[in-house]
Amino acid sequence: MQVQSMFFERKASEKLNDPRLQENLKRLSSKFVNARATSILELDDFEGTRSAAVDIRNRSIQSLDVWLELFEQKATETGARVLFARTPQEAAQLVVKIARKHAVKTVIKSKSMVTEEMALNKALEADGVKVRETDLGEYILQINDNERPSHIIAPVVHKDKEQVADLFEKHHHLPRKTDIAEMTREAREILRPQFLAADMGVTGGNFIIADTGSVALVTNEGNEGMCTINPRVHVAITGVEKVVPTLEDFATLMRLLPRSATGQSISNYVSLLTGPKRVGDLDGPEHMYFVILDGGRTGLLGGEFEEMLRCIKCGACMNHCPVYQKIGGHAYGWVYPGPMGSVLTPSYTGIEKALDLPQAATLCGECHVVCPVKIPLPDLLRKLREQQFSRGLRPWQEKAAFKVWAFVAQRPALYRILSRAGIKAMAWWGKRKGVIHSLPMAKGWTDQRDFPVPTGETFSSLYQKRNKK
Image (cartoon, rainbow, N blue to C red; front, side):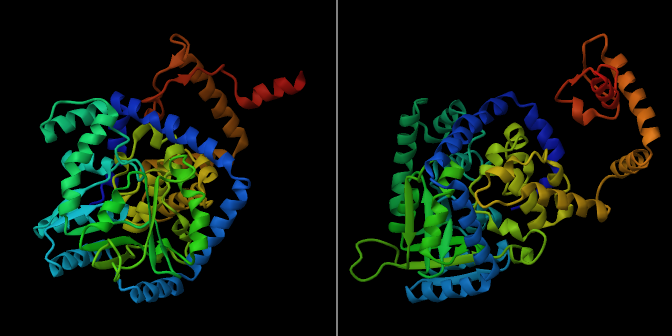
């Protein structure tokens, strides 16, 4: 997938000025944030469970080669084939070759962010294979000119019911419906024949289990079952970091994943799939493949950003991020939005292609607080900022401003003089209107918010007066 993160500032501005998007994004708090806060109370020891999850993910990452080799051995014993790819392009071509080998004409897909990295749909369609997304949100995006997901869990959170109704009327050529149950049934009726006729099913993998050679799929719609039972071929695609040692480890992580993602105690559907159809089985694929992608992940091992490999892709960080809540996911310009994307995109695609993303955070720390595997996202974002500055990748105006700030901050007497002058100037500037609508050299702060008028006194002088009292 082409990286568009270099256009973040322009895209973010467009999203902030889109009133319909702003209204749609309010659902994040009402739906996911509040539900998570309630669901974690069901656990007797939430923090203990988080700590156990951190240990599991660290154990997986620190011996990644060992667990991947064990997974390959166990999966092969079940009759599946395991293929490894260094780059997203290589992974996409592996899937294309599998489709050719089995004379595949039609593919049905369950939601997978890794396939977004690979631009898999485009690669398959270029080879003459018809691809249909079956996750409802992904299906909506596909019929809307192959629009990208804006969220890793709720890919169409940026659209409202009326927009979806318009899309369905246009593409289904049926009377327009606005009742959610009726719209869902309509989509189901459109998709059902395609489920039954598909030659190959493609899914992601929330986790792959080393000691059984299984893939775990977690969904709320059940479409992953239709993608893996009916087609002759099943291809499960995931990143190398998704391996966990045992089924017990998976069970622990499942206590956190749905609660962190959607605020559910457990997802509607949890599938553990092990190998192709065996003698006596009533259903299942004749052929099963695993495509395991590196895509820059092993480059994080042993480095400053290794902790990002713990990520279980729940989306909690973006649900709670004040920046994501205002601009949505498309502004981030690549597969992964929000705080996790602001670290992963520079790490996977190159920091020079995503200069604005490390700055796209308030560093309030809420993403760290809600992360089920305790990834210190604010610290990692700060490290990326430091790297940018040390490599001379920030604008000259910014570097000049920091040099001026450093010069003044090291001279307390000068700092006090300039602070008093600045505060008095701001008080005079906003006196007539009661608020400051714009400030010279602070356009980024005042474009989207008004600045309160200060009293004309510095913090130091106010603090001294208080102490005297």
